[in-house]
Amino acid sequence: MAGLARWAMFATLWMLAATGVALPASAQQTRERWVAAWATSQLVPNEANTLPPETLTDATLRQVVRVQIAGKRLRVRFSNAFGTAPLAIGAATIARSADLASPRIDPATLRVLRFGGKPSAMIPAGAEYWSDPVDLAVPAGADLTLSIHFPQAPAQQTSHPGSRATSYTVHGDQTAATDLPNAAKVDRWYQIGGIETVDARAAAVVVLGDSITDGYGVQPNTNARWTDALQTRLRAAGMKLAVLNAGIGGGRLLNDGLGPNALARFDRDVLSPPGVTHLIVLEGVNDLGVLTREAPASPQAHAALVEGMIGAYRQMVARARAHGIKAIGATILPYGRSDYYHPDAQNEADRAAVNAWIRAPGNFDAVIDLDAAMRDPARPTFLRAEFDNDGLHPSIAGYAAMAAAVPLAMLR
Image (cartoon, rainbow, N blue to C red):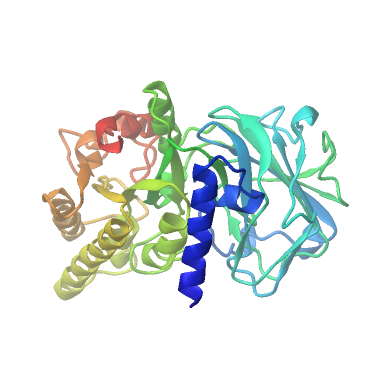
């Protein structure tokens, strides 16, 4: 009976819309097509990346993020994904940033965020929470500030330490302040998961990866990750596709690192953001390197690792396809000069085997051969010198080269 009642309600709403009768506000909102315009991956910060409880007690945290596609109506996804107790949001605002490297905002763009019409919210442990929509016109590539007042510090912080963006903390509710001149600074994000906009024609691509995607070596407030460079290419090509960076430093396919393993976070980072049509997977170098970082491994352990990594890829491809998402595999970059992993011939054989599987037709829906684009022709187990930072991570020029290697046609 409940199903019949629900069907009758939607049938009535459809007939009202067809005859030109105005729908109630709640029904109008169900017809809006939301698309993720910015997102980041969540984890429990380690001790070095955790803010002291007193810093977030009766405090305002202002964070700066860059939305990837234009919008006129926005909502914010707050996260208590790893919280061990409910998280109180006393107040929250959104505004255009007046200066990417400072807490200043454009006061004319300040909007108070509400939750079910109320200015505060209580987010359950392990949950995420959308704000109500607000009208705020922003162009693609706009820098926005999210300001949150915490009456009490989170019981356990949910964070993205690799923000490559500066955040600001002050005491008291200063969510509406035009500037925070005496704020403390930290290059981290906390308790925020995404920003979404209404757009009938836009879409999003999630890039699931490790520190190479997270932007190791990128200086704060410069937006020079390879995903940023890819976004610039898409914008120049007139493609309204948001690039959602789901990179976590130290991330692995099979085991937790600094954050959850790729399969454990797949639903939240890939399937949860609205409007996702494409997935790029660039992850696995840490699985390969960790195996022998401390000591040699047996041939059986090498074979099991390769089998496990391929199994993880299969799982992700199947989950993506089940949700109508095109799954794109990116080959693992060479890391033969890495002093951190010091790979040997067997490690390289493992990488070659995994890359061969990624390249094989039908395993992924498409392939970005970053290995071919980034390797030194004279020493194919090494990154090209002009693209190399430390033997493992690309330089800024290398990140630009990675973005340039993506065939945009596969993202249409």
